[in-house]
Amino acid sequence: MLPNKHIIALSAAVLLLANVTTEKGTALAQSIPSLKDTFKKDFGIGTALNNAQIEERDPQMTEFIARQFNMATPENIMKSALIHPKWDTYDFSMGDKLVDFGRKHNIKINGHTLIWHSQLPSFIRGIHSQDSIRTFFTDHIKTVAGHYKGKVFSWDVVNEALNEDGTLRKSVFLQYLGDDYITQAFRLAQEASPGTELYYNDYNNEQPAKRAGCLALIKKVKEAGVRIDGVGIQGHWHVGKIPLNDIEESINQYAALGMKVMFTELDIEVLPRNFQGADVGQRMTANEQSNPYAAALPDSVQQQLAADYEALFKLFLKHKDKVTRVTFWGINDGQSWLNNWPIRGRTSYPLLFDRNNQPKPAFYRVIGLKKG
Ligand code: XIL
Image (tube, rainbow, N blue to C red; front, side, top):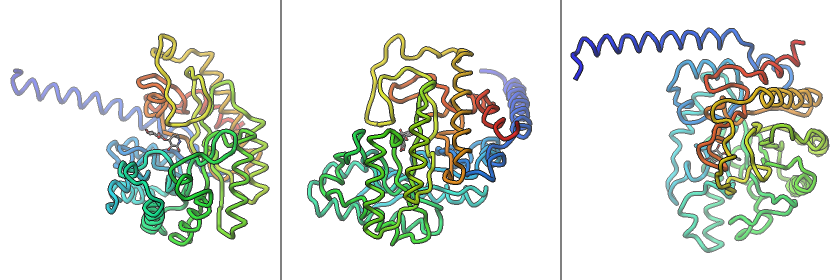
């Protein structure tokens, strides 16, 4: 064992080192432009937040978030498995912390999500009657949306209800409640939380067939006299393959139905994948080629990523009258879900900030659209 004085000296040295890096981090965080300020006249800039960030475990990170973003979506904690763990038990502890975080730092919260086929509470698997599913569905929306009435700015009321061909996904809700469940979800959310904006959210809903299904879904809700305020295009895309034309067409068509258009989970995958989209149930098996940039991202890919982000933000700016928010799915590359999906333990580089929270070339290209 080390004698005490050595331990003290050692901890002092570690602390000193920590301070140096921290001060550097803070200085840099304050010297770089702010995304939310740069685009303040155009649209909101959001991020997904994880538990550590919501609990403000790292003050530098909190400061960084407050400087860069004015909107936030919880990455997991408001999903039904977490917020409604047992039939008659709700756990609002983390969600309430998020609401406090938003108040304190002037960040609007988008609740994510009330009705989704994934990350459902485990007790759902034991339910096999229409009555019980309807009771779960109704109680869940009323209780959760009711609890956050006046506290969240918006809700992703229904998430990922569509198949790629535009038909409705065969979720437990469709199976037991029929295709009217979507309208019903919006109706219940509106009753429980009248002042909150209500959205439909999905991935690949910029693709023509899925977009057609999404437009039909929106029309159906509206025709029933139920409020729907906007549509979220998640935006989990691939480097060098951003479907800019489909995105532009989608912005126009959704806006023509009176929808606010949002990009709600933006990230750009640089790693190999044999399918498009973000079906969390889909997985891939690893092989020698699946994690090519474990050491570093080659400059050519870094530049392509930067060009892709620039092109996207250029398009968002062109349609700033229709696009109300752009939310990144995470703050920096180290925290992205893409390091673990659809293969665990890869090294991905999908965001504007690197693993040390330093801005990447993509960040400067996006900012440059307003400065140049
Ligand atoms: C992801 C989270 O990022 C992961 O931490 C979690 O393990 C799975 O879900 N579409 C959505 C998001 O609407 O909720 C998903 O988030 C990503 C795809």
